[in-house]
Length: 208
Image 1 (spheres, helix red, strand yellow):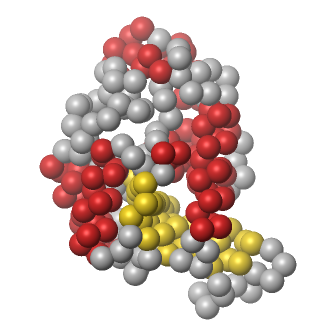
Image 2 (cartoon, rainbow, N blue to C red; image 1 turned 90 degrees about the horizontal axis):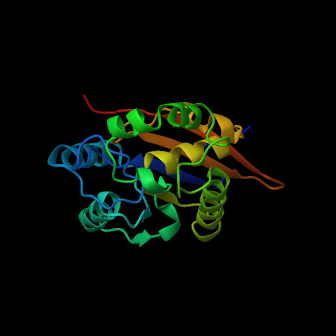
């Protein structure tokens, strides 16, 4: 039986908050947090802080600027990993969701139900995206074993990471809900003969 005293690595997955720019496919479009998004992320962090050892962030502004701020506030190091960028939506990046729905209604429906069967024009294939997220995950466990990590990233990144933890098929990754400033927690227990990974919590909100 595993317990909190076993050597384990804890990863808290925090999605960025609401952004400037309205209802668009952001992907790799580099926008800032709105004031509301900034405030909610800060409230979440100071509500749940379990004594993180390190922050690891996407390089995009909606994650990295907040990560730098909170690392200074908490006095812990912050690392930026290029591989944590959101999936690229290609020609959809930066476009209003409603406009994409009007032009690509059938394709968008297909992508939402099974992203392995359709890739947006000039977008990043889901299998390629899955590979880079898997590489980041392995790197975290190697470089920060036994630590408490706050990972600040995007909805697509966190969905993919959770789907890999739960060994879900790639076709079902979009079924995972990940709201703005949502938090999930993963623990990897480093036992004598194996690592055991558990999703301890998903979308928990300790604040009102």
